[in-house]
Image (cartoon, rainbow, N blue to C red):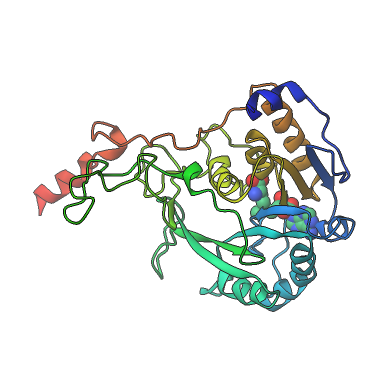
Amino acid sequence: MNSTFDLFSTKEKIASAYSPDKKAVIVEGDCLSTLKDIPSNTFKLIITSPPYNIGKVYEKSVKLEKYLTSIEPVLDELARVLSRSGSLCWQVGNYVEKGEVFPLDVFYYKMFKERGMKMRNRVIWHFNHGLHASNRFSGRYETLLWFTKSNHYTFNLDSIRVPSKYPGKRHFKGEKYGQPSGNPLGKNPSDIWNIVIRDWETSLWNIPNVKSNHPEKTIHLCQFPIELVERCVLALTKEDDWVLDPFSGVGSSLLAALKNGRRAFGCEWEKKYVALAHERINSLWEGRLRYRPLGKPIHQPTGKEKVSQTPLEWTQERWKS
Ligand SMILES: C[S@@+](CC[C@H](N)C(=O)[O-])C[C@H]1O[C@@H](n2cnc3c(N)ncnc32)[C@H](O)[C@@H]1O
């Protein structure tokens, strides 16, 4: 079945309450109360970037302990609504207080373990852009924790392979001597994902971060690149499975799910973000959503761009000394 074609011909309205026959649901309001209405074992994938408690416009910064305690009831509900063969991907950065760094994934690891989850990967999401620190090394990565509810889970490696660097490599001994040693579909993308802000920045995992010159950019400050979620959707779910983002913002996770023939459920309490998510989903269904295609190669600087050249002033300074 060509799910993309199917999807575009559906033009179904986005529902505001869960029902097993829906394709896309967005509920405006607090995710905790929304989740309480969902049957257990519903979602094959839960993927989100929760509020980080760093004082973004959509959140109030509180003491770390208080933040973590307040999110516990949501984690209980997520563990309940995740299907027995399901996966949960939790993307976080650091909480910083008076210059001290608290890596949120360390705290979350313990919290999910207490709920019986098993970790499969701690993915490093690396990017080459951000604030320049002066009292410590500049932070250039966040993490994505992938947990499963049981030992029986979906992992479609072939759907997310990436081109290998040396496809021409061959076995040099043994029974397979002389035969190609790699996989014709490419290699496992590994647990280091590189997210760059602009196409000219180099990458390890080649998913550009969502910033101002990115085709997906909206007014939301902490948007997921659709491409990043797509990789998880393709690897961890099958067509028609339900994907949940309990903190869905402008709907990037929902788009990644719908674009690949999955069902999507989002919770978001900011009206303006819900409206934007609706708009983006409708444009996906109408074939006019701008997004960065999964696996599109990153533009490499040639050295001729002004930004990749050493400022003339710096060169002249050197001559003086
Ligand atoms: C880090 S952002 C996620 C952005 C999202 N990944 C995207 O691509 O747009 C977290 C979002 O969660 C929302 N939020 C925070 N607490 C919430 C809650 N208790 N219930 C529903 N939404 C919440 C915020 O308004 C914010 O849009």
